[in-house]
Length: 185
Image 1 (cartoon, rainbow, N blue to C red):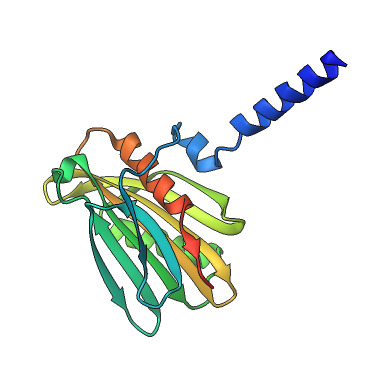
Image 2 (cartoon, rainbow, N blue to C red):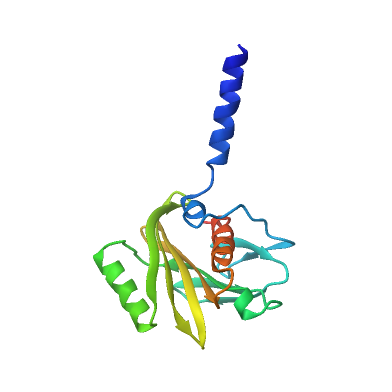
């Protein structure tokens, strides 16, 4: 009886340790907690995200999208990141045209994909990439995640990371924020 109980405890512990998302594993992230969090809802009430209370935010909307921009303005640009999130109306297919358009946009911005993948994001089809280049005199990394929410809507989240220090840590913070987004539709 004790052996069965011990076996069950070990199985439960193993399963709870493997709850990290594929992106957390890809970037070797540890679970991070947002200090002094506040919840921001986009203008059209499509999604909510939780960020630190000392971050500055800006909302933008049009008939096709609703966006939240956020950044920790108490830190130097090379120690933080700029976060952009948007709920978009329109069809999205992860097909050859999508990847060709993504590559074209990155090439125009002088960015090169360092890593990318197709994963599930909140049980939805998603594509992510990490690109690197130079912008405004700094080494620049862009982490981008796009998820198809329905036949006529999709989500996009990205972070702009300047400088060479703590890149992975800032990517992991981005991933933690994005994975906690709550969709309201």
